[in-house]
Image (cartoon, rainbow, N blue to C red; front, side):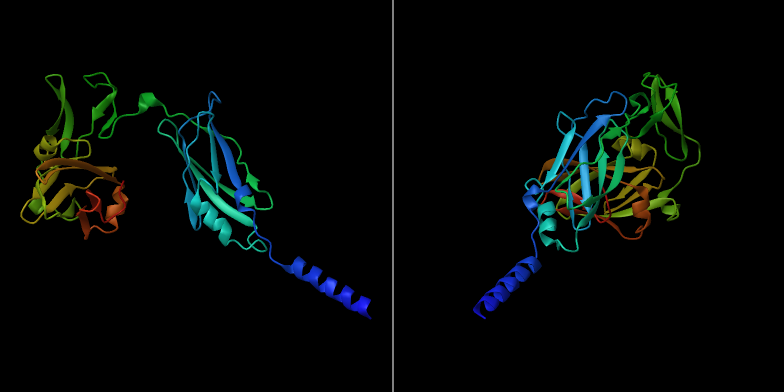
Length: 286
């Protein structure tokens, strides 16, 4: 009888141990990959590898061998996410990776990781080089008659046309002048500037200097109402803010996708953040 009781107790212990939840060996999990040039198949250094999923993200960069690593030591969000998983039910991890480098076309890929394997190795990524000869700085576009022979010409706003005067590029008026006070909301975007301790504002726009922007009337600043009006275009926007803060000259550039401001065109605000010493827009900006 005693033997039977001991065997029964031992069976219960075994059953209990078998039913106890197991823990993921978090320190062993890692994502290892490599990024190569599509033409030369040489490693690409300094590619930003943005790994993202629901609840976590990491952004390592590739080393001189084009390799990148995501693990619990380098990425705390990744570690915290693994710790939150239930090994019995959360055994598949879905995530995506964006690969970004200034000299290559961006690329993204989605992945599914079976966590029975502690190491995940995406296939080698081949990035396509950008044709540098066709690239132009912001505010300029490819052309064949640039007087400086750079292959890029100044982008002229609506109501003007590109021309060369005394071997210099200019944007000449077509003769149709758009007055801001008569313009409809569909032609101009209005932004409220909130910065009580900031003075002497001036603005450049879309690659044009302060003087050029004012001369072409693509921007208008009302110092009394602290409201800025800029001509609407479908291209990416780039606003250069120049001002004086505590007797010091300050310059900052804010860039954004024009579709973002279309969604909230009636309530656009740029506010000075005193704690971080920076202007912040109330829309998604870069």
